[in-house]
Image (cartoon, rainbow, N blue to C red; front, side, top):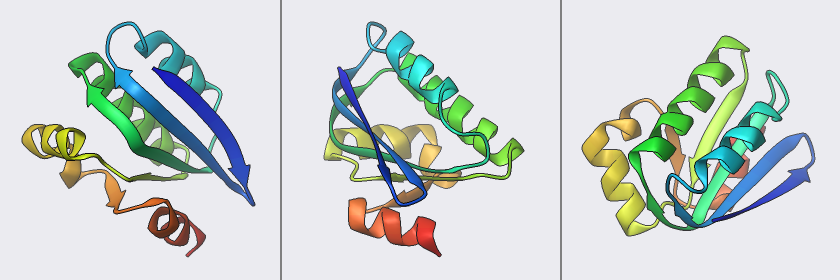
Length: 110
């Protein structure tokens, strides 16, 4: 898995590519802890093919941290497989999910 971090205006975009399994979790966790406290964060998962349970835990950590620090967190571009995993695990009920990057950025700008 690879990560790409970019800043679009005041929004931090973290794009994940490949498979978020046990091997990629330490890098993703490090990136999450480096995100600005209380900031506006967009996770772009349009190139994420797979997410393991360890990766799901990190999305939960990021969501809780963002809520505690009064930030905004949006996830966008879920591939079919990742969308199914999020639905089966109930992550789609507490994460704000948008169809693509453009919609995610718009949601964070409002």
